[in-house]
Image (cartoon, rainbow, N blue to C red; front, side, top):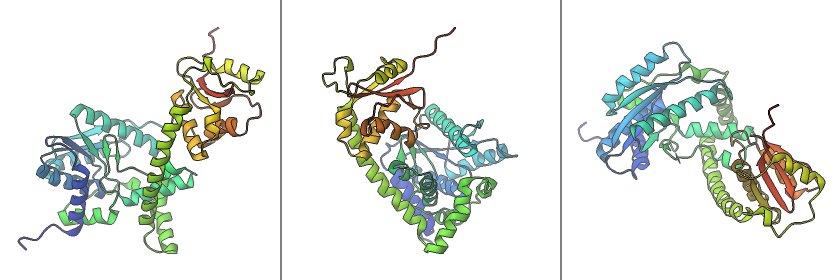
Length: 360
């Protein structure tokens, strides 16, 4: 009927995309990462519609992981669809998936590397990802099972640098309905039904079981939990930033606040880890007075600043370093990833890489 607006699901996706793009200057290029599934296909169609009315340029990227027979042709189909959605340029990015960290993590790393490279090459102001509220719920459950902290339980942010997730407030049913309303035929990736993948088991077994036992609305509740955790984590991270700046000893060689925790173990441990460029020294007294949640964040920052890889630095590593503050008994060096050692000496914690072994 003339004058009727789009179906409700389509209007919901349009609204979400409009809010996600409202700060971009006219003429900016926004790219949609589209696999051809319902979530990213609904996002792509909405972005083409919204961008043209907001004076933005919009394009499409699809990533071919090369993990399934015919994946190159499916990627080509997505690219061929793009102009009809108002998305130009459109590119298929072929990636090589390594084996580190498991197949899901390896594919994700390869995908983001390709998206970031293409966005930089094309001069994009933003890359839109099709994660929904259901994806957020799955992420929270997975991280909860791993014993993660507040920042990790915050799930996926709506914005992180170049990347934006407009659909985090919408459920997967909405994106499926939007595709139906627009006459689009999403592609169902067989990997999304393969129980060998942990996320698939969470999606297909765990979440439905929770809904059956606890009632509907579990995904929405988990997404709300992520939002609340993000608010808390942002506040604690801000406090930790200030505490870290205050705890850093800028010139440890002339620190007047040396205390009685110097011993031969500390001296020998310090000689083992070296110092100088890249080393981070923190005053123990200030650390001990901080709430534990803030102190652990400060210690994590120090370890990363000294060279520990963030992805390999676990809560267990940080807790070991924390015992040098809260349970000091003359312990020797604590090892953290990246060849970084932590020792307590003269009322400070020193984070530094171990010197390379001499070549014989």
